[in-house]
Length: 315
Image (cartoon, rainbow, N blue to C red; front, side):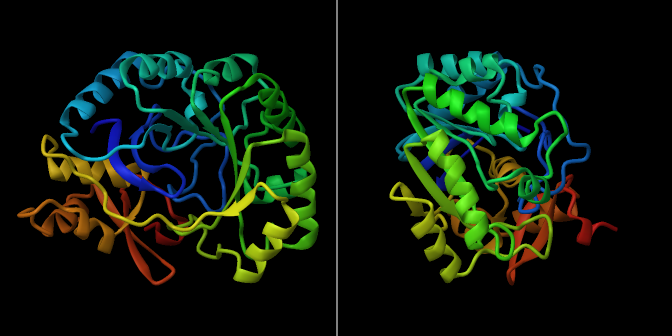
């Protein structure tokens, strides 16, 4: 299965071609809202999980197959944490040389306290880390991190990166009902954001299937509270709309599998995205063959990767 997927409609980036530099689910966090299931185990080792040269070859092929489809960004977004790939800097530099599309990196930002990680990201056009908690207790409760990435070091890394980085620095806050949407929690987040000084703060909600079935998106009241407390650069991000692109040169079955492995998609969106003449049974076939599975959240059925571990669905 390839490591390049889409283009996909992104809540913040329009139409984005995704590049996954790590195997599922390689992450130093184990967030309660993660759409890719639990991290088993939680991993904090940087190494060459997938070589940059291999990824760049796949990107070049995907770009050649695009045809007339619109594309806004090329985005490094892992099925886990992309900065764990120690060739991330080579990948960013290679993408800048390969294409004129702007390059974004979506990351949890947990390793920004390491100078080599910050250096690897400086050439990107946009870097988009997360900050869901304003203190160590909420960080442990919500993001459930590896012990090698404590809260204070994470925040210091985010502050240091701001001092060095000249591109678009967009912070995401995932707002969870009953966890980080209270006045106290939001004021704590706001205090850290004041130190980090991102260009924009994106308030997001868990609209794809969270690993823990009790996770619910914040209410409208919680969103308004966050907008008021997190400052003038904060804006609420709405769920993505539009079709996922399966290019003419792609095998539809492989394209769907590559997509849902990194980006669980509702059955409705997937069926609307299949090329004309492509049978709906592709989705049932992937499930029957054990390559994908159905996860139901918020009354919606999502297709996701078979290896993803959702504890309430485990046999």
